[in-house]
Image 1: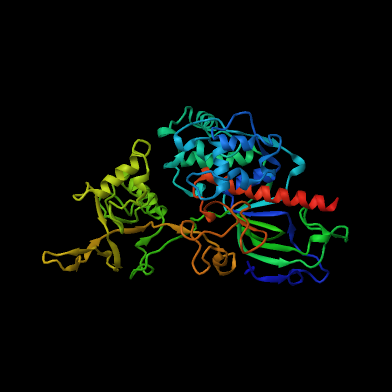
Image 2: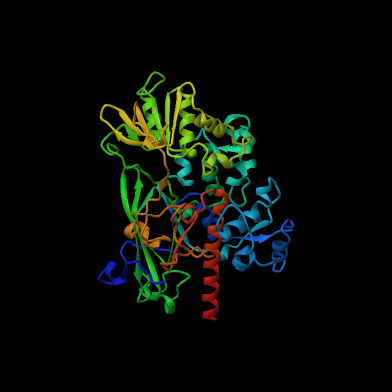
Length: 516
């Protein structure tokens, strides 16, 4: 497929002597330091997975795994290994990695991993992981008192058992073990686990914390790079030697926050991985008064701030929560715990089979099913009133919110619009999903999506990648992992790093063979 990314001659960003002033060279730049970025850094640091002695319960996969037991999974044919696997991800390599780490997890089993990890220092691939905050990405910004949707052990990364870490962490921090309901974990623990993982695995040297990427663009390299110390021609990285360095190179620019100062940075690398997640830009509703009224907010932290400032309490007008997903449910649980009245507005019918609550077992997620029961109640609960199949028409300056209800059938059989309702509110909290911030790419990354005429969306319009290498179908050397390709659960994000690392390792091996 024709590459749509903008071509830029390397000389355009080089000094008069042909050297890149202030430019750092590496093999891989990873944008995003969440679980995907952390896992990829672990693999690129020379940590390779091998099949261990535990037989896999899937006889077909077990047979394949025993064909090359001494060969790392990274070096094998991932398409062949993942063929025929089924599960809750649409990415075959994600399913492969999940079933190797957690065999029969979907059946409620807690079986040992089929992988062991060996460290090969000589196979380290130089890389840098860029992130605005501490390692863990968006997990560091979430409400730490909430429970994860997934089981705690599904949040873990290679070679560091989450349960063992949690027991040690709780004993050292609180003098005891905090037993989360049914092995679900507190978000604060997960965030700390990811930070500790980077330290424990010796990955800190690869992470540039406090960095914000502002630009990613492709360079066309038409000459060997000049070594700034020796003055001789050489390749800029291990994967691109002088005879093949006329391939694409990527330039990543941004700013590094150091105390109160901002320092610009620039990397050149043949490979860039987008691991940014999808929670950067909240989706908005198109109604009158949305952008002109500070009553309407899109982040629960804004409500928490208002509570802390004593702007909201149990005597306030209700907070209107808009949305029918788990984020909206979390907000309702938070507001209920503070005894703040709630008006809940959502477009779907409470019987809609697409509601997330219908997919969650009651025993494992009792708090979400409590919210669902409240949503279905026609009479409401004390301090809570739901408006299913409603949407906002207008937010007026006097904090009056106008709602439009569903079309209904009158007694004589004709269809009539439900009369508008006016609700007096203190705040309107709109939680209807979010999309990634890809402003560092041209056209906000739309050219890279499956449907290039629409915004990138993890659910409806992900980045178009090769399902086994995770390389963009439209830009050579550009990769995407995690929610950007539809994997929204940490349980499945390890597949993307495996695919990318496998592709880079095989590229290196092919290059070595060519040189011999």
